[in-house]
Image (cartoon, rainbow, N blue to C red; front, side):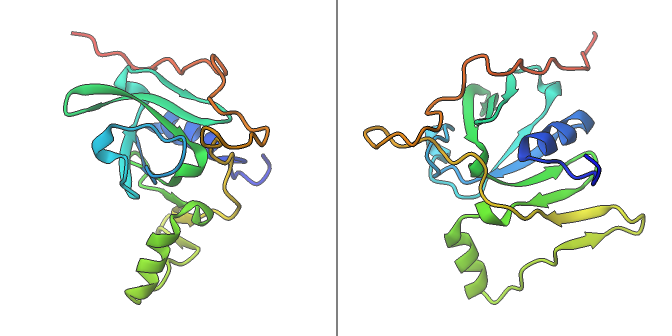
Amino acid sequence: MDTGKPASKQELLESLLDRGMVMVTVDARRPGVDVPAQFANDPRLRLNLSYRFQLPLEMNEWGVIASLTFGGMPHSCRLPWNSLYQMYSHATKDQFLFPADVPEDLVQATLAQGEAPPPPQQQTSKGRPRFAVLEGSAENPAPPEPGTEDDGGPEEPPPGGGQPKVPHLRRIK
């Protein structure tokens, strides 16, 4: 793109993952999210994603499907794009917020505490954004709940819709 800005959350996440580990903040209460049961009601679930984990990680137009470990136990997590509302790159320290996808109850709680919303963009001394608020509406709404009318959106992520990224680093003993 000419502007240098990613066109979608998927492009942004792929770009950040190419540089290293990324922490995403997820509203685990959203329809379509699959995480371990003890985290299913967490509106601020933070998950680390990395190609270096050597676990399956796939992104497509529906969202992210990644095998992550929780207390040493693997779980195949499913994260629709509209459930991800913040990304933080451990490598570059850049943060990206998607205000249209921030849970409304968190917004109201923040406003009730009298905290000012963050400025649209803060610059580092090198001129690179450390925190960016990305405008736009929720991408790819979650699939409908079972028993509701289908609005034409995919209920499940497309099988084999994209090839999982192969880790580019390998640990050699």
